[in-house]
Figure 1 (cartoon, rainbow over the protein chains, first blue to last red):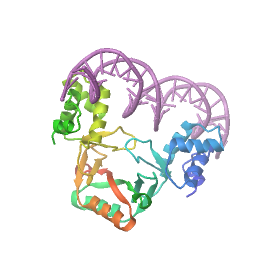
Figure 2 (tube, chains in turn orange, green, yellow, blue):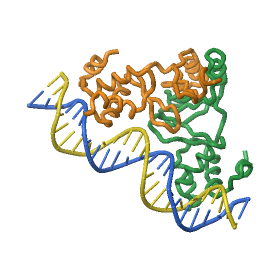
Figure 3 (cartoon, each protein chain N blue to C red):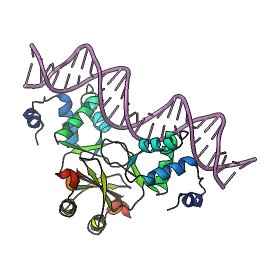
Figure 4 (tube, each protein chain N blue to C red):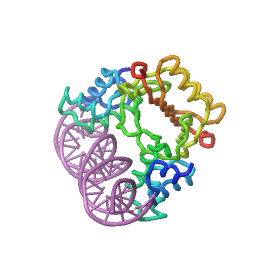
Length: 137
Length: 137
DNA sequence: CTACTTGCAAATTGTTTGCAGACCT
DNA sequence: AGGTCTGCAAACAATTTGCAAGTAG
């Protein structure tokens, strides 16, 4: 996935805030809040403003380059590079890690809803709160 | 489910705001925001304050009497009387209705995560965005 | 009585917006 | 050059909190 490519294809400009947000999003292995992203971006270039980070993230969301998720009912939104919607988020109550689980479950659910209930699923969001193997002890 | 019973059991007081929020939550068939609940409560007793509605809702959440869900990444929280977590929310992009789907899917997912990945699921949240039968046309 | 609750208003938090200037292309 | 982007500060919306007064048990 190439940022410049994706932007130019739609006549959007390649700017410093966009490059930095992109880099931070990809270098971090986990989910980040807008504020966390902004902090890391600022370390690299203090001139970049928080509101640009927000604008950039929602642009990325529109372009399907990034994905926003609500991991808790309370928390702020968390961001990560885009991935298919059949990825389930496992949020550990012990260490706060967010694991990804990929399986057939979402696909099966989607099919079931369509065939048996006539509901056309466009986007499936599954968040499981619990304890990861290390913290389950 | 009896409100007075649930409150008294924990030495909590049965008050007007609590009774009214409880009633509104149960009389409405669908998901309501705190503001909507407050508006309906206020119609019955204008003295009840919005912040009491918030305090009451989070009390109900603690007591497992009500359930909060984020139906969109943007929206405010929506509330409904508590129900098991194997109920899936289907949010229709056409008519904004929120349907409930009850099935074995969540239970199966929970078992799978436990047996194959050692992840102990405590709470599963599934939200499916799409189109209900009427709006899928 | 007296601790639990509430109303009210002010404070927080997360996110968005208006606008003039900066900068990609 | 010219329209797209950004920084900044102010606006917003949802939710929370401090505190004195109210009330359930």
